Image (cartoon, rainbow, N blue to C red; front, side):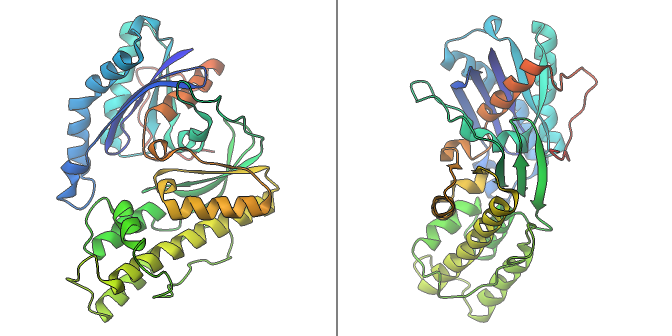
Length: 342
C-alpha cells in the first residue's frame, strides 16, 4: 500500500511516501533559523511557516518518489500530540486532500510513530528488522521522556514518564543557560565532547526510584554552578564550561539508560527501542548499546535522520493503521495536542 505521510506537530513540516516497509521519499523543512533568534519554538510563527510549506513538501515527496497522487492508496497525518496550531495545518491539509482524492485518512500518534521508526528501511537497504515482542521503548524528545511496553506494533502500555522537564527540553534550557543558543541538544553534545564529565559531579534525579523521570532539578543545579563559578561570558574553548556541559550530559544519559535497563529487567522484554530527537545523541546511543549488549538483548534505534520529527515514521505507522481500518478520520475530527499513547 502506497501511503503519503504528513507531519507538522512542532517546527518541522514534513511529507513522505512509504510502501511495504520502505520509505520511498522523505522531505523535511525545518524552522531553526526562524526560531533561533527567540531561543525556542514560537507556536504562532511555527504554524504560519507550516501553512506556507505543507503543500510544497507534499508535492516534493511525490516528485522525489516518482509517483503520482493517483497511485496513493491512503493518507497518514499526525493528529497529536503537539502544538495545536501546528497540528491543525497538516491535519486539515490531509482531510481536504483525502476528500478531494477520495482517499482514507488515518490520524497517527506522533510518539507511537517515533517508537516504531527503527522498523523502516530506505530503497536498497536490507529489509527492516522484525521486532521480537514484547519490547520496552524509551522515547526521548523535547516534549517526551516516556517508557512504554510494546506487545505488538499498535499496543502500548505506559511504564514511566517525566514529572517535569523532558530530556530534550532540559538540553535546550541548559544550553540557553550556558549561552549556547538554540537548538540546544546539538550544542550541548558538541561542547561536552571537549569536556571532562567528571569535572562536576551532578545529581542523578530519581536515581533508581521507579521508572519516572525528572530533569528540572538537574537544570537548576547547572545554573547554580554556572553562577557560582562565574562561567558567564567564557568561550566554548573554556574547560570549565565544557566540563559542566559534559557533566550535565553524562547525568542525563546515565539516568535514561538506567531506567531503560530497569524496564528491561522488570518486564522481561525481549529487546529495547531508543527513539525520539534525543536518541540522535551519540553518547546516549553508545551507552544504550553497551547496556543492551551486556543484557543480551537487541537495541533497535533509528538512524539520526529518523530520530528527529519526520513524516516517514507517520506514514509507516499510518500504513499499519490503514490496513486494519484504525482511526480513520472524518472532517469533524480534531487535533489532539495531548494524546496518551495507551
